[in-house]
Amino acid sequence: MTRLFLFGAPIVIAASILFNGGDSEPPTVTSQAAGPTKSGTAEPDAAAETDEQSEEIDALPPGLAAPEMKETASRLVASAEASTLDWRSRYEAIEDIGDGAGYTAGIIGFCSGTNDMLQLVEAYTEEQPDNPLAPFLSALREVDGTDSHEGLDPGFTDAWREAAEDPAFREAQDETRDRLYFDPAVRLAKLDGLGTLGQFIYYDAMVLHGPGVGADGFYGIRDAAMDSADTAAEGGEEKAYLDAFLDASRSAIKARKVQRDTTRIDTAQRVFLREGNLGLEQPLVWQVYGETFRIG
Image (cartoon, rainbow, N blue to C red; front, side, top):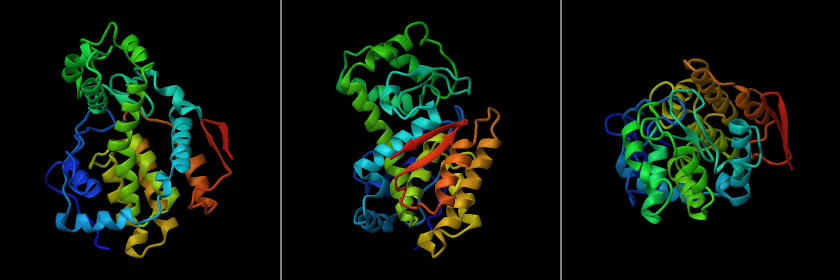
């Protein structure tokens, strides 16, 4: 398979063409976890080939997108993000964790400084105009790209928790997670010839690092991994490529000004990979922050 080289126009345009077959509006999102910086620019090397590739991807087994596997993925991410397997308890969560991205909230940590929270609240307000968060939309637009709380305090955190009681807001969180992070990561992993574990590794990295093309963003990490090892789609050995990807992801974490624990890689994903569990089959036993978790 021809490797896709990314350059030039916004990365989200490339993602929309590749993952949606050009049939929806491209999302715009900045880095999810690395702070309020723009995600960079890119476009596919051969956009004309993406429709055919999309059909090929859709014909593959569901992998991580199967309902039971998506549930497993959500529980794994929650263990790393919040030390819990109960990911649904995170709809109402909101705090400023001091990483330079403003408020972090919800099931995968939407941030007021990284555009995804703004997109979430805009989508929710379009469906439910009279909601507790609607009065804060103007302020969210103003603080986007910063760590500022201006216009959000006081009241925003209480409004978030109130909105989280609404099933429509929980659904909006699910849909925004899928559109910006889960679906693009899983489809690209399939394009790279990766199985269910590899699809999860891509998804977790997309959540943690954001869809940026810099060295600390998901696409930059993927580029670094591809410089070290061929993907399975290129004829490489899947485990070797995933090892290279995890190495690059870990290096990006350690390079941050505000560092995070690397156990989600060291004692979780790397354990599954070392065991050869490329299908992410249960039982799964792993540790995060020294706490042991088990599924199955």
